[in-house]
Length: 535
Image (cartoon, rainbow, N blue to C red):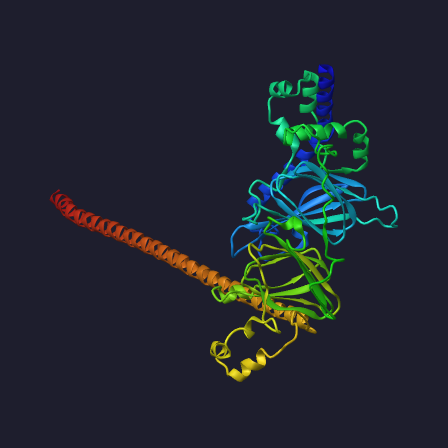
């Protein structure tokens, strides 16, 4: 019995030599990117505002079997940021198990595969395909297989878009990262503790500690290789690690009936909330998807045909974070009157496939498709209570509820004008708006031109200021230089005068001496002549 236990424990550790080290690559990559993001906060796709372009995504994992990237999009109204990750698995690949630190709500953008996760006492599995949405609770262990897709000439990659919530009440970015690895939970202990825990030899512990770190996404064939010898051991280990129960969470328990596979919601197959010739829209709440119970996230999907528009509306209880799936569109957001008008002008932007954009609650918005293609986007709403979008027009318009005289006073117009404004009985949710996106794009371009012109004027003013400052400095320098030259001239002139005075003095002294010599020579001659005459 003891030998069997030793063998089992050794097998467990050997299994984690192959599987568990892979987990740490995810966390290490994520931590590295998170640190990088904190240093670059406010730049690029790391919390840069209401729009993050596809090319600004940060790469966390990149192998020949798949990729993981992420985006933080800032919430300027409520503070903080939201974290989204984009998983791409090549056909027949495996994203290895991780432990969720946060609720994870996701949408399957393309491809097929199998999702496996722990829930209470069981391992649950379900097939996933394009259009599916689901939620995994924090504390779950999950992994994903992509299908081989052998029946397709060009197999589709499995692409999953996910958002992570810090908690049920705080839907912003998790403070500790979205997930971590089982390996980290194990290798944080000393060798002696591990040996006493698993009752295995030093060799097994040494091999465990010296294991390499495979990438987060590996070929799915490695799973089948492990299944023959180790998957039955792994579920026993995880059972004891996570719950300490004596039954197997990965296999059917004889005393309990296994729960049925989870039912997902599919945007592309379920009945639409609203649909007409201009497009359709659907929202997903806990009423439609039981997995959302206990979560304050909802989902939505909008498909606009060419030259159509999602009618202006606002959310009283939710911020929307959306991902463009197809085509191009224009997003117009009208800011609160409390915000600076200049800032409001910036809330008009063009989105392309793969871009992420957000609209805070209490901000009126309209999404428009260009005339040449459909515009499709999917998103997550951060509704903490029941959220009923408020549309400006149509029979569901909030304006129809208000007193007409009060509205007339608010708009400083006549009651007749207000009556015409709210007269429409249509479902004004998705409307035809030919060339609206083009006009918004043109206005955005004009705005950019005005901005560029203003920046050009500022540059010219700055250059003029610097030029004037330089001229003033040069003038002062010349003045200082002129004062120096004048001083030198005065000094030279003074020295010249001194030299001339000295020369004049010396000349006068010399002349005086000469005159004295002349006078002295005349007086001496007379006595000589007198002496000569006496002889």
